[in-house]
Length: 134
Image 1 (cartoon, helix red, strand yellow):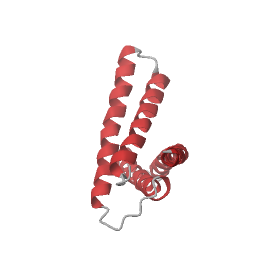
Image 2 (cartoon, one colour):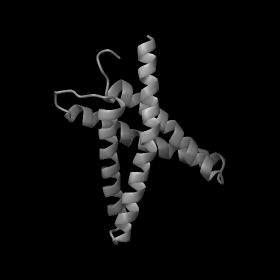
Image 3 (cartoon, rainbow, N blue to C red):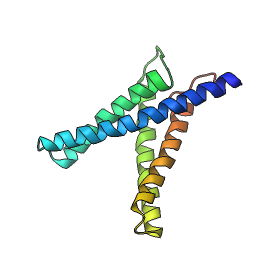
Image 4 (cartoon, rainbow, N blue to C red):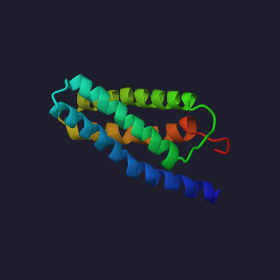
């Protein structure tokens, strides 16, 4: 029991380290592409794909240490489902808070980001990168 708890704590710490890095990657690539005069939507699409690709690799190989020999297609599919679903949840939480408190922009984005980050960790640990021992 203590080993599982310690493993989960290490995963949470790693997740807290990687998450801002992935956000910074998304932000940096987006602004770099805008600098080169790509359209905003194209820049955002490219930055999203690059950041999520990096996020997948960090989650799989460093945070959750999954080195399965079977096809990664179902795992990538689950990862994509989680990220797209939580993107929608993030927007909904943000909008609900802004509906109740129209000027609480920081509260809205902070709350939406923190809640979806927690949900993301849980979904990725127990569904996307699950092991038979968890």
